[in-house]
Structure formats: C-alpha cells, structure tokens
Image (cartoon, helix red, strand yellow):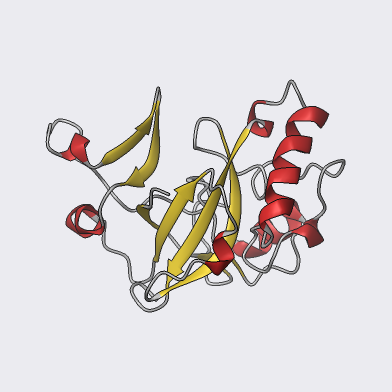
Length: 186
C-alpha cells in the first residue's frame, strides 16, 4: 500500500469565504449531521501545497496518475516545504484504491477518518460536492466528516454510482482512504 500526503483547508462552521459559508453548504448539501467536512475535494477543502511547476525537482514529489495531478505528494517533507500558511489545516495521509480495511491500520499520530470517493480527475468528491446521488447513497451513509466509515460500503457505493449514473463524469470514482494528523494543523 502506497501512502501519500496532502494539506487541505478546514471546512467547518467557522468557514465564511468565497460565497459558500458553512451554513449555505449544509443547506445545499443536506448533510445536516456534519461537524466538519474532511474531504479531498479541492473546491471544498482547498489544497494548501503549492509546488513550483517550473522546478524539475518538485515533480519528483508530485503524485500523478496519468494524465492527472492528484493533489497528493510523496513526502511530508515536501508538504512542509511548499505549505501555504494557514492558522488551521488538515494534514492528511491517504492511500488510493486500498485493498483492505484501512480503519484497522494505525499510523502514528493520525486518526482514520474514512473513505472519500473522488472522481477520476481527482478533483470532485461524489460524496460531498455533487448534490447527492439519492439512488445510490443517502446523507446518513456518510459519517460526521462527510466520508464513508466502512470499507465494503465505500466500494459498494463506488460500483453503484457508476452503474446508476453511467453518463455522469463525477460518478466514475477512486476510493481513497483518509487519515488526519491528530495535532499538526489542529
């Protein structure tokens, strides 16, 4: 299993930027049980790592799944080198398409928060930024962070999303396991 890293903005009840306050998001998404959104969706939880794309060395740390840049990076050292300062942020470790239940994998100083379903472009979360796919999953299928807690359920939803929505770009997804650092950025 390959572990990658990213730093993302915090999206919770303190957020009120870019015209999409937390209150407006909760009303739009109908995810009324969320306490915070810990998503890999770059529109909702902005990527706080700014690589120098003109620097060949930086490309050694940028994770690419051809032809897409994923917004994930190969080392924590690179994250801290290119982190755009924020008071609070989510330092995340992830794995793409895990082959076993990640809730049982203990990463030192991290807590497992769930599985996100990012579209094939690694941009949009089908769980939290598509307005819902009620024929496939309901808001209560997501935990209080907007993720799926159960490994089997994540893969079942991934399969049914594409079956039920074959012409929807954001329904063809990657299952991504997410761990959040317990203290850094908190």
